[in-house]
Amino acid sequence: MGFLVKDISMPLKNSTQTFWRCFNLALENNKKNYDGKRRVLSIIAEDFTYEELQKNLGVGRHTISESHKHTRTNGYGAPSLNKPIFHRIKLITEQLQQFELFFSIKEHVNMSSYKTDSASGLPVLYLQDHKQALWEKFYEQYPNGMHRTTFMTRLDGKRFVYKEDLGGLCSECNECGYQVFANIEELININITDLVLQNELIVAAQNLRRYLRKDYSKQLNVTQDGIATHNSCISHCLQYAFGNCQEIHSNTCTNCKNLFVFFKK
Image 1 (cartoon, helix red, strand yellow):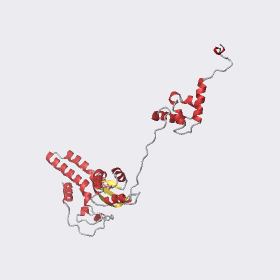
Image 2: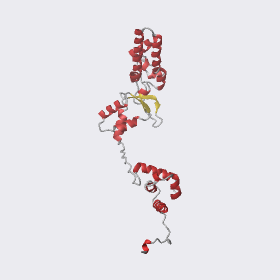
Image 3: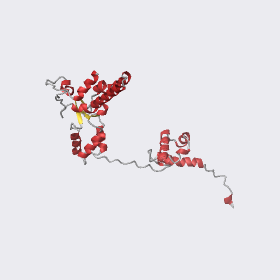
Image 4: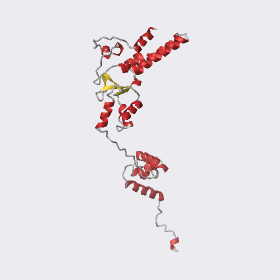
């Protein structure tokens, strides 16, 4: 019956110390990375304080913090989730040439005669339509060309400027001319008491603003090399604007006449 008698000569095992010792050995046998110490520590990290883990395991606060993240993301001691692999396909020369050819057509862009993109050194291009409409035209012309995401990404560069940002003009003209129409309409509402005349002037102002925003820039003649050419309407002649035109300007277009008549009123 001796087996029923407790042998007081044998020391009692401390289960707490055994736990910490075994866990410390598990940490030492794993590398210090997301699939090593952090994964092992994530088994108990949520159940102990930072101070208890530092004192008993000798781990740093950063390792403990990363173990908490591992628990929330992958679970207690679970392997890390595999990150998705992205496969990127480089554009072939033909696709790049299609893009450049598409944006060399005046129907799609107006080329700046003096402003260049600092990154590429190429002239800035003012888009003649919004990006979605340009993409639809590009896809119709080149159905096997670059995909839509790539097309839109290339348009995000500073070389391509959407005319919505400029009011159809360069930034200085936009600041001095286009934005002023909002103030003109406010002045009309304040100073004109005749409702018929007030409505007539506001409609005229809105038509002129729409013309400056959408159609005026289309009348500015620039070659594919970025050289301004002569226009018989003096208001559309970039050469005259830069003081280089010696030819006669024989007419003024209807829209420009309406602009001058409006301000005379």
